[in-house]
Length: 408
Image 1 (cartoon, rainbow, N blue to C red):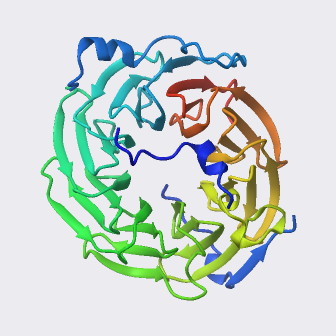
Image 2: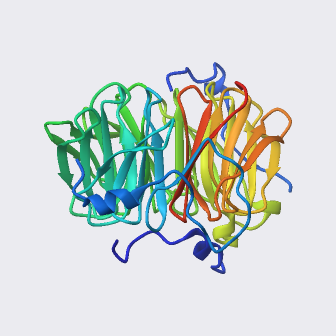
Image 3: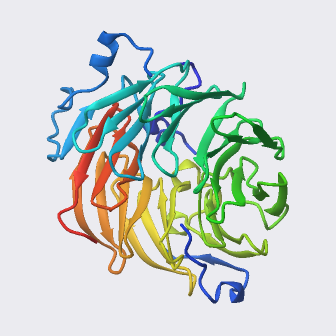
């Protein structure tokens, strides 16, 4: 771990400051602003210490809810988790400079992804679950064969890395870095293209469902849609009344709709480049300059792009009707919301700084189930392809798998 390991979430709080089509009427939405009222290189000893069947004892004796699987995944924080498309494996990355692949059903360590010299903050399986990529903050990416457990491709950007994302149909990997560049590689050949941004950090990005474009958000509040074949910008949100008032913190996309967030949320039509709406999400209608507590950390579109879920560090989940552009539900949390994922058409699953995983009925705004999963901040969530399991990882290095009692 180097000194640029991400800050723990409590430190932040202590500061003062798919292929579905877009809705048929998306093009008819007027531009509006809306604000609501209210192969491992580890020693045998290290591998043995990488996981286990039970959570390690903590100084805090708050009881944890029983999980289907729970184990200590990393020394220090566990920053990221992802589940393979075939539902067999999960991958985690942590502050101990390694990624690990585990069996989803048992928590058994399959293999450790070594070779990193900094905190592993990116980890993802490819479209057919045959490859897994792990990426560290210093810009080193390793791609592994799940079957052979051997590295098939090593990539180095020589600059700090923020995110990775696989193409949905091909073995093509994208990444965004602190110098504003979006990188694209063919795997395993390593053939590379780069897309130069505005010279500020590219904090978030995602390959769009058509596989021909990607959307990226930057620290100057701008958003760009890239044509992957031509390495050119097709549309962008730049300039006055277009950019976010702060660095873009999260992004989601579905069909032609791209949603990005900072201290507000902006909706962009990827096909036309039109800014469809700006949604104000500040707690209590507060000032945009209120600081970190008003930052949106979680953003998720439902499968039909009809409802947007936004999680705010002030401690609430905001659900927006994208047809009417009104907030239809506000779901209070006792601490900041760090992740939000849709489980089917009516349920949103959240991860929170209080260590609790919650599921919410999007129709009523009421919680349907909650698990005290960790004694530390939840830093990432992932759902199994069938939606029956939710994986969470924490600032304490633990990983849990909880199973829902019934389908959504």
